[in-house]
Image (cartoon, rainbow over the protein chains, first blue to last red):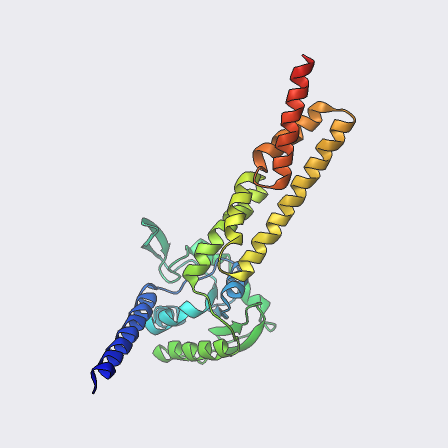
Length: 62
Length: 230
């Protein structure tokens, strides 16, 4: 491998490593599922973040 | 049992960064556990770890929005889009560990149906905080605080929250402009004290807006005119 190819490869590895590290730190921040306090709050957050809402019905509804 | 086997699953917890979760659960029998929030030790539900049992009771009837018949499988997981409209659901067919894997697969399916850029919860929380404080200040008629917080929220990164902050600021601007018109009308009559009362409020609480600055100028002129008369 030429010196240039080695440099490119190690730079790419460093980028991958930084991305993995970011991803790991993002994931490790969560120690539990964060539950919304109201339906309105859930919809507002979902719309602002562009993510789906998971409604988990665990027992007979009140 | 979904609460003891699925909810604490590490893979599901990690995947939940890309969704908003809400629980429809009746009962306060989960027990409590201590958590650290903002550096403080707080007591939360052992299962729904960012809520107290009283707090998750408040969302216990969410399921009624989606379940028409009296009988349904437990658990039932309903996936909704960003407007809260159901996309699909899965009921009952959750084993212990496999249940969490299935939910993660369903999350991936739900994400596929919602194209576009995702924003992190951290970004959302940073942006929604001044918006919430601004809306609270608005309700309590603390106009200066409301303008400050909503202006900060208006400059945040999430378009939906920026729009909400801008709409609230427009409402405040209209209130201020109406007060200024009233003050000007009182000056014409003239009913100086009623005018002064409004101008004072505007110059103290709306000074960040054009109407507040105009009011401050009018108040100054009024004071100067009155001191000349004496």
